[in-house]
Image 1 (cartoon, rainbow, N blue to C red):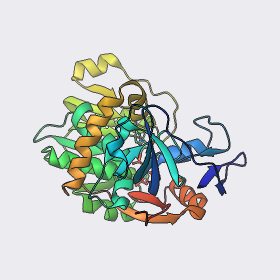
Image 2: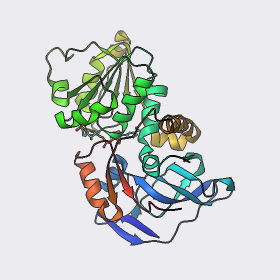
Image 3: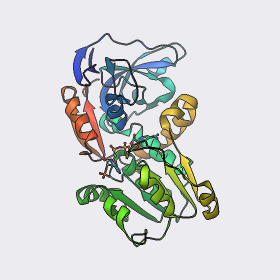
Image 4: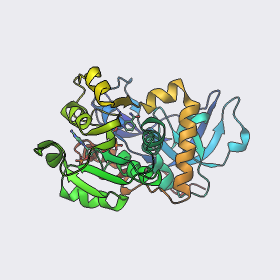
Length: 323
Ligand SMILES: NC(=O)c1ccc[n+]([C@@H]2O[C@H](COP(=O)([O-])OP(=O)(O)OC[C@H]3O[C@@H](n4cnc5c(N)ncnc54)[C@H](OP(=O)(O)O)[C@@H]3O)[C@@H](O)[C@H]2O)c1
């Protein structure tokens, strides 16, 4: 089968590999489209040590073409979307049956764009920050894959005001279609005098950034406000939080790690993913697909993602016309 492998030269090469076989609890999926995400960039940078050559790609949509021991054979031929531990940039990927979801009726591009970002956004809003009706939510990286989905889930949960933080005006124009009440730039967030940019304190802040943004976000929380930390886009230097200050102001710092959850409590992640997928299938939540690449263009595609030049979701065309 054709696969794109990350080799020792840190570049992606289209090559032929033996087709993988599903083990117990696993399925083999003939991939139509794969989603691109930050994890692919981190793997390339060596942040997650993997043996080279390595087939990256952590989210795939396609049809089940094989099942391992203990997996229901009724899955064969079903159209699915799967969260994988790699391997999605290939004609066939192996996925855990628990993290493979029925996507019958959903177009395969949307199913691939669902990826880890949609269950993450769902969990941030519903199981971590637990957004209530009438609350005020601030979303950092608002034009990104998670941010655009989180804004929609927050609105559906009844959030009253949703403010997004983006890199520049162009990204604000893109993010505006996802229901934000207001979009501000990172410079506005960081630079304003009273620390409030004309907004009342927030009940919830979603923070994949870290560093000084994390501390500034905590200061913008209302009493009983929740900071949901889920990434370190600004770098992983430690950020010291003052627990006494949190306590005295009734603020909480929470974290979320979907990769860890997939290993410790895969059923919990699966449950959230099914809720999120239902919202997408019913048209309540929409992934924004802005770029589609051929397998030969993966190097360029991930270069653009790494350079912050993408909006919403990028997907990879693997074998779109499987039937
Ligand atoms: N913990 C989890 O379970 C989990 C799950 C999924 C993703 N993540 C993490 O969440 C983050 C966002 O994921 P995503 O899929 O939404 O990525 P994405 O679609 O690539 O969007 C990320 C956006 O972040 C903004 N950004 C980049 N560098 C920044 C910086 N230094 N400071 C502030 N903003 C910056 C950029 O937009 P602007 O220029 O408009 O700001 C960029 O487009 C990534 O770090 C990812 O690894 C975590």
